[in-house]
Length: 169
Image 1 (cartoon, one colour):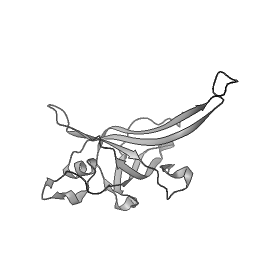
Image 2 (cartoon, helix red, strand yellow; image 1 turned 30 degrees about the vertical axis):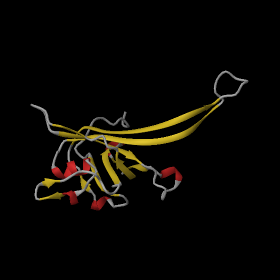
Image 3 (tube, helix red, strand yellow; image 1 turned 45 degrees about the horizontal axis):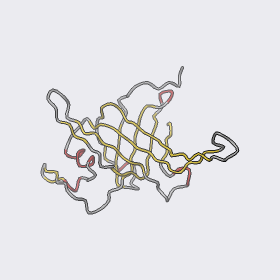
Image 4 (cartoon, rainbow, N blue to C red; image 1 turned 45 degrees about the vertical axis):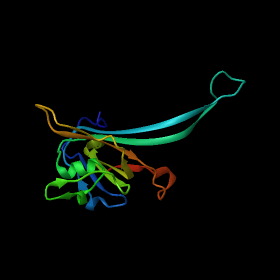
């Protein structure tokens, strides 16, 4: 089978830029551990009528996407982005963090192996760190940072493309 995509490959990258920024100006978040999880969920409402025992239709009432990964390079720059800050919170080897005065929205670019050896490029237009960043400092283990992004609806895009796109190149 030539359409089976197996395993993480060395070209996998996650790039982040302020919302609306181009990939050329995005920051590479470095190596990852355990891959990238892109989750799509829908909340459905069943339409029931008295004449039938089962639902006669189902409609989508909510839809969302979540992106999860583990950053293997726990640099201060990557930790800043994982916490929802940017390089402006870094100065002379010190990362400052606390209450955020503004909401930071990001555009994410994820490059992975696609079918038949092509590059699969995911672009998620508008994302927000969902506040579940975990950093682990364990004996005899790598120092990593788990990050989770919520993909938001970008109302500037057509209705069928408001979360993002995936393309094989």
